[in-house]
Length: 299
Length: 273
Image (tube, rainbow over all chains, first blue to last red; front, side):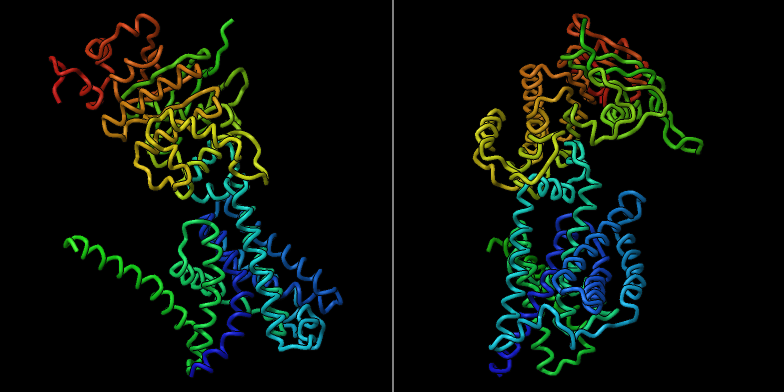
């Protein structure tokens, strides 16, 4: 049994770090900017679509990844502009972009999916090394994920980072201090979706295909990861939030892997995700209520 | 030649124009405030006090007329560009600070008011000493808690911090929007004394909107009363110093429909509450 559980670790780490970058992006939009950005489902697939198409056209994978990330940045900026310039409600702006991206992604790919198993991707050199494929791949994703985490933490310690944090915390206040909060929102959403697209581009190559539906459910999975992580690690500082995103992503993927191993049907994954989030939020809430009741009784 | 810090030329503001709810908030106001003057503004609810402040700050745009700050026409300048001229404190003690950030982070943000922000470190180490000394002035012990989150502070402490943030980079204009109204009497007095101290020390041009007639009379060089979007009374200098609350009610009582204002009368025979 333990052996079976341990066997699920490598894939959980690989997926946890790869998808953890999506969670990092969602931390910027949901947690720091307090912007419920649903573009994520679309920009994840955008990353996969762009890189797959470019690789098919013969572009080296590394350039493909950069361009996919840039595409994600643009998509996020569009959501931001819809909200700040056209005054479209934040939730709706994200939904609109997500919807638009569906068609855009189909156009980019030219069809509903592109297979990448028979072509050279950034994964190929890693798989060709003389060791178990998991070692270099997990190392790669871990390095990229933590690298992005550290850069994000550092950014939010800068003057610009402070301004972005304040935009999500108290927009009126930072406006009176002379910050263009519209620009902060657009930039933040751009950064957020750039991360998501980067993840999509790498995941597409890792799984061997890009598919129009690969982004579906990404926002929920990402939020679940963040919530699980925050329950374990906390969310006081920015560094904690980003660590929670990565840790939560790994734990989330691990729970899914264990569940599948124990017989959970793939079709039940969304139910499992929902239950996990409910437990992650509900248990601390009930614990707190119980503590307060005991406190009132003088215990 | 006296430098006029704030000039309002025939300012008008109408809300919900051409609808059933149309309200003429400001009905043609002309006002010159010389640099260094401390003006208090009173008036009943709906008289236009906060709207006036919003127009000067740039939160609202006027429907007619022009606004000049330190000689420059700012009528159509958006708020985040105009804010380098002024520091502003709101009534809600929670509005002036970012709760999820620390005291020193908030001060660091205020330090950069109106300046471009880049990728340098948010908190400049060399300014920490200055922040600590400034916090000592508040006499609240906050200088020992600089890395703590602002959410842990009380309303009065947050408002004091907001005051410090507003005056940190010595703005040309200080806008106070009933900034002690939500505080308990003792804290309100402390914050008001601190305000007066900072205004005098930096010789700040100040506009204070208040509901508290005692405050309006006791502080400031000049008092303006608004009624239905117009300035109905304007006293300054010795005439203002000699005012008492009872006198104000006596002279201007006709325009004061606000129970709250009338309730400021001293207990020796004023209008009962």
